[in-house]
Image 1 (cartoon, rainbow, N blue to C red):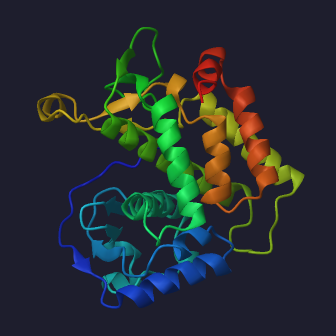
Image 2: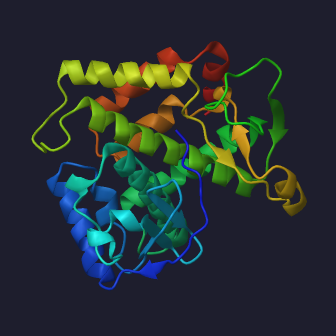
Length: 287
């Protein structure tokens, strides 16, 4: 599941920025949605805006730390307040969480090495740096997203990419998983009941969805070439299924970002390991 960027038009800032951010995090917590990582973001860091976006519910732009919501997600389409999360569909909520993750990752990179860094952020940043070296430095890539067409033998090329490209590939791969995990949990469980807990039926449904996502090559990211001339010809390189998110990365994000228990994170990681083909297992084992 990919979330493509679109040009922003008629963007406007939210009048009560800090109040709106506090309301968003509070409502997410009341609904039983992941909220801990949102509460760790300083109220003044992310600039909330509304715009008439094309085909997406939200975008995050690191330049300026801007989170832009689609205008139709605002109350009365006025671009001042976000509608209640209870009134937003599962797909749009998943997209919003995909972009909220990018905002948090932006902050973690911004605050790394400073007293403002929280233990949770420090853990995510340290693991990201480790995975960039061991999983996102030499990758198999294609100019075509595998989600849109069945992978064909020989259509991928192996390449050593720059640290910045690897960082972007990791960031997008992790964002793809966060969005996927949110949508599938909302679909598998009762989204409007914060008292709902995983039972075996919903866990089994979720894990079956996870296995299907691996088989279909859905949990891969992309990066934009650092070379401007190359970017004009190929704006994005997509990672091959052999470089989909690994089991340890899944466990990390479920626990640190998605507020799952360590036990659930380990179970999902085990399921991912069992779903991977031998090539992917060997690639993941480098970490």
